[in-house]
Each structure stands twice: as C-alpha cells, then as structure tokens.
Image (cartoon, rainbow, N blue to C red; front, side, top):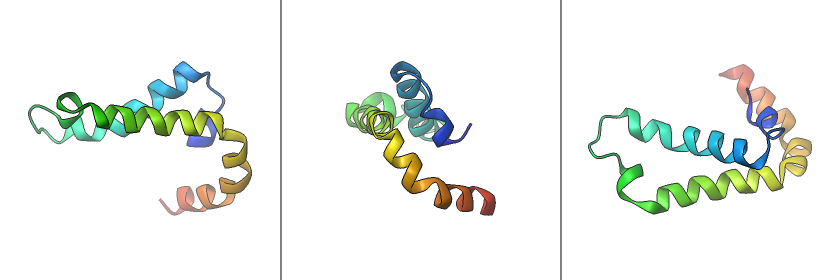
Length: 75
C-alpha cells in the first residue's frame, strides 16, 4: 500500500498506519528503551504528520502523484 492509497483510510486507520510507519524503525534498531517510548514528541510528530496527510490527501494526491511514482519505481 502506497502513501496515496493509504489516504483512502478513515482517520483512525491513517493515524495507526502513519505512527507505525514513522515509529517502527526506531524500535527495530535495538536501542533500549526505544526513544519512541521514552519521549512523547516522537509520537506527537508522527500523529501530526498522519493528520496532515489525512486532511490534505486530495491536494497531495494531485501534486505528488508523479514524483511518488517515479521515486517508487526507482526504489
């Protein structure tokens, strides 16, 4: 599922997907305790980004479809 497809989710699904994606990498690097759980700003930034993506999904979809497709194909 790409970021543009995720914009079709409801707000709870978008928050969950955005926060797991943003915070998951920090958990996988074996730092104990993960910074995600010891400092709340990480969670706030992840939730804020997910909310911005949710509310601006139409504008993002119109402007960023080509760059996202190109970068996705390059990856």
